Length: 313
Ligand code: ATP
Image (cartoon, rainbow, N blue to C red):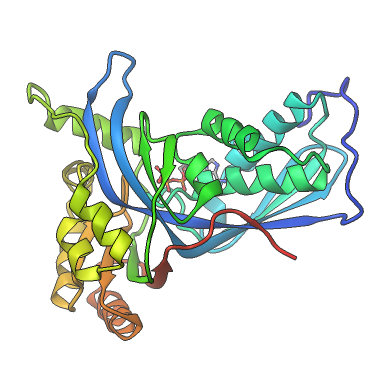
């Protein structure tokens, strides 16, 4: 699928293969403004990277190819619509190279789950190809390509915690203390992010939606590592739309709350649901209760903040 035969092949480093690990995210605040004339929404989006990871391995190849392994692998496109493939193409085009690379995705982040798995693979492929081709792009150059790939991709590169404004892609890194413990309930099937925004617009038709603003109390809870304070400030303006499209999410949210979670919310555009818990022990108990409730496909414990895209040794 190269289509760029006139370009020289990239020189590769002696490594031969580069693997990058990239985290999933949860939005601890997702404040959504009204639809803009261009159809997008202004956001105040507080991202937190969590310790569920995809790994993207880049290997020299005759042309651009993508493979994927993992429980959701059959739902991942392997053509050039895959964000990992698009990242390789964009990076190569900027350097006048042909994107002759094989990208293998070991996928552990739920697909179409509201945890930015595709964005993670885009950021991972970008960093892996940059290293494989010995380009040494600056962080600013990489972030620029990430923003072109999608609103959530810059955060996948950066990790940690960050406030995204605009469409969510203009990032300011945020200080976080300690570790927060989470359980993620993975639903059967995905939800399309555009469909959830469409439902948000439908539910807010005729409503004067306020300007999205980051919550000072939430930013303070992150800074001080106070899980109880964070639980009291978690919000997701897309939650009513996600629950409207997938009413069964209410039962999952209730099951996690009944099992002792400090707070429960839909992750991003869903349908994954996120449960903030006190510690690792509580995470185990809530994950077991969620699995036993039969209201989700599986439940996974994770911690945050997690580092952004990282080249593995
Ligand atoms: P977000 O939280 O950023 O809204 P998401 O987690 O809900 O995203 P993704 O897993 O990123 O959803 O997938 C959304 C769609 O993107 C998929 O249904 C798939 O068609 C497409 N896609 C493109 N590249 C990938 C990829 N590498 N992995 C998964 N899906 C991909």
